[in-house]
Length: 96
Image (cartoon, rainbow, N blue to C red):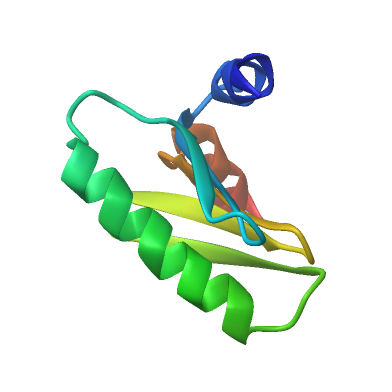
């Protein structure tokens, strides 16, 4: 799992990933050091509750003032990938 998380983190703009196994309530994460253990625990618990209550096989894009996230929910796990918006994206949108 560590190798998978490292590969995801290598994608340009990705700053962190949390994977929660819904059946065993296990958490795997590769987050910036600015996220404390308590931060990650709270996020993982919220993800677990969310993943159990929303539709399976669903993905959501979330946009924030200083970043973005993609949430994947399936039967066995819920994944959130955190990133920072890339300036190139805004240039493309502005030119359309």
